[in-house]
Length: 232
Ligand code: SF4
Image: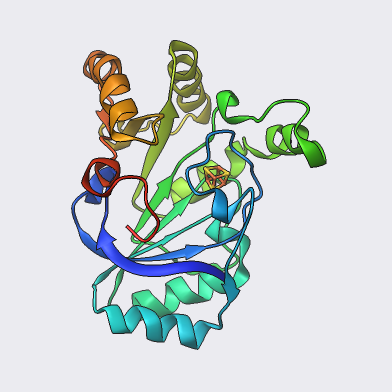
C-alpha cells in the first residue's frame, strides 16, 4: 500500500479527540477537494509502497493502543482492510478516517470507529481544473449506499467541513436523505480552516449553529496544538 507517513500524535478531532494514537496515512485519493489539507496525498501524492508486515512493524514500534488509518482515501487500498483486521486482532483500537465513497474489501469488521467525512458540493474544485477533476470529484463524492454500508458496520461518527449556511443546509438534507436515524451527538461540524486564525474566526458562528441544531462542534485541536504541519 502507498504510505505517506506513520507517526504518533494526539487525535485532534471527533469522539476520540485528545487520545494518543499512531497515525498511518495512506497516499492517494479518488477526490480532489478544493481545500484539501493533505494535498500530498491527493493533488500531488507522495509516499512509498510499504508491505503489510512492515507497516505493522512500524506501528508496533510506536507502542500506541489507538491506531488511526487515514489518508488520502485509505479504503482505496485492498491491503488496508488486511492491515485493520490484523491490528484489531493484535488488540489495537482502530479508527478509519474515510470520505465515505468506497467500502472496505472484506466482510470482517475493519474499524472500532468508522469516522466518515462526506464531502459537500463546496469541496468541488473549479470547472477548469486540469484532468477533469471537477467532473470526476462531483461524480464520486456522494455515495449514499456506501455511507449506509459503513454506518451499518459498527460504531461511527460523521464529520462535515462547513464554511457557509449552504454547506450546513446541504449537510442537514444529506443526513435526512440517508434515513439512518443518526444520533446528532455523533455528527461533528468542522470549520473549514487551515490556520489557527481561520479556525477561531469561523468557529463562532458554527458553535451557535451546533447549539441550535444539536450537532457537535469539532474544534480541530491539531491545528491549534501543532499548526497545520505534517507528522502531527
Ligand atoms: S477526500 Fe480528503 S484527502 Fe481526498 S481530496 Fe478530499 S480532503 Fe483531500
